[in-house]
Amino acid sequence: MSRDKFYITTAISYPNGKPHIGHAYELLATDALARFQRLDGKDVFFLTGTDEHGIKMLQTAKKEGISPRELADRNAAEFQRMALALNASNDDFIRTTEARHQVASQAIWKAMEANGDIYKGGYAGWYSVRDEAYYGEEETEVRADNVRYGPQGTPVEWVEEESYFFRLSAYQDKLLALYESQPDFVGPSERRNEVVSFVKSGLKDLSISRTTFDWGIPVPGDEKHVMYVWVDALTNYITAAGYPDTAAASWKFWPATHVIGKDIVRFHAVYWPAFLMSAGIELPKRVFAHGFLFNRGEKMSKSVGNVIDPFTMVDHYGLDQVRYFFLREVPFGQDGSYSHEAIVNRTNADLANDLGNLAQRSLSMIAKNCAGVVPQRGTLAEADETILGQATAALATARKAMAEQGIHHALAAIFAVVADANRYFAAQEPWALKKTDPARMETVLWTTAEVIRRVGILCQPYIPGSAAELLDTLAVAADKRGFEHLGDEQALVPGTALPAPQPVFPRYVEQAQEG
Ligand code: ME8
Image (cartoon, rainbow, N blue to C red; front, side, top):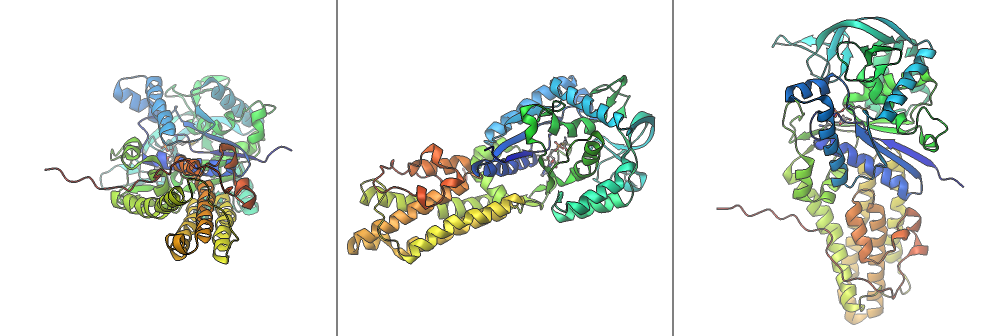
C-alpha cells in the first residue's frame, strides 16, 4: 500500500543578503513539521530555496558592483550552508534561476493566458521594491519625512509602464468561496480574517510583467517583458513537484502546505490560489503564517542592518539549543522575541536540567548497578504504568498539535512528560531501593530508561541530533526510531548491553568576564 503523501514548503528567500535569524526560524520550524510526518510514517517532500529575480536583487547587485547572477550565486550558497548548519532535512533546494523553473513559470503563464486571464495594458501606480509589491494608493501614506510608504512600512515609488495584467478581479467570489468552504485554508485565524477582509474590499487586476529591466523570466511570446517576480516566485512550489510534467512521479506530492511569514500572506492566500485556479491546478492544502522574530523587541531587517547571523548563534549556544529555544519559546503563529537570557534560561532549565539530568542520573545508575545492561523489568507498579502511559499518550497530543502547526504545544506536551518523569524518579528513590529492594530498583530504572526512550523518539523532529544521541545511549537501533516503535512491543529488552552514558545536554555556563 502506498503511504500518505505530505508536501511542505518554506518561503523561498531573497538572496540579496546573507540569511538572518528570521530565515533560520522559518526553516527549522518547517523542518520540525516535515520530520514529524516522516517519523509518523508519511512519504514526505520538504522544499526550501531562493527567490533570485526581481528589482530588489538587481538594485543590490548594482550597489555592490556585481551582476545579479553573481549576487544570487554567492548568497544562495549561504542559504544552502545555513540549511546544513541547521540540520534541515529538506529534500530539494530550488533556485528560481534554474532552467526547470523557467519551464514551469512559462507553462503556468501560458495556462493562465489560455484561460483568458491575461491581457496587455498599461500600469500606473505605487510599487515597493523592498516588498516587491504593488499597492493601491489608499494603502500608502506620506510620512513626515515626505516619503510615501506602503502598508509594510517600506517606501513606494511611482511606476508607469506597459504591462500584462492578470484578471484577479474575476477571482474575488471564487476566493471568498474558498475561504468559506475551507476555513483552515489560511492559518492562524487572525491571518485568515485579514485575508478575507482584503478580498472583500475588492480586488483589482494585477500587473504581472515589467519592461524596465530584464532580470526575470521572459514572458512567453513577448520577450520585452519579464514576469513580475511574485508570479515566478510562487511557481517554485510546483516546479519542484515536476510541473508542467504532471505525469512525473514527484507530482504526486502536490498539493503542499506552505509555511511563510505573516508579511507575505497576501501573495500566498490571494494571488497564488487565483493563479492556480486560472491554470487549472489543484490548490495548496494550507497556508500557515508564522510571526516575526524580534531581537529584544527590536525589529530587524536586512535593509535596516541589525541582523543576527544564525551561524554565530548556533556556534555559541549549540544547534539543538537554538532549535529547541525557538520552537518551544515562540508560540508558532505569533511574534516572538529572543535574548541571551531567554535562550540560556530555557535551554538550561528544560534540556540540561530536566531531560539531560534525568538521562544522566538514571543511565549512570544503570551503568554502575546493573552491569551496564538494560535492567530487569519486574512487575510494573501503578506509578510505572502511569508514567509509561503518559509518554505514549504524548504522541496523540503532539500529532494533533503538529497537524495544525502548533509546534510549541507539541513540545510542551513532550516536556510535561519529562517533568513528570523527574517527579517519578525522585519519588521512587531508586538509590534507596538499592539496599532495600534491588529488584524494585531495577524495575524503576528500567521504567525511567524506557520513558527516556519514548521521549527521545518524540523529540527527534525538534532536536534531531541530541535525540539521536539519547537513543544511541539506550542502544535503540536506527530502524526502530519511528513513531510506530513508541509502544510496549518495542520496549527496551532487559539484558541488552548499553554504551557508557555520555551527557547529551551541556549546561550553558556564562564566560567569566576577562580582566
Ligand atoms: O519574502 N522573523 O523573501 P524574504 C521571522 N522571497 N520571519 C521572517 C523575518 C523575521 N524577522 N524576516 C523575514 C520573501 N522572515 C520572498 C518570498 S515565497 C514564494 C517568496 C520570513 O527573504 C518572511 O516572512 O524577505 C518569509 O516567509 C521568509 O522569511 C523569506 O523572506
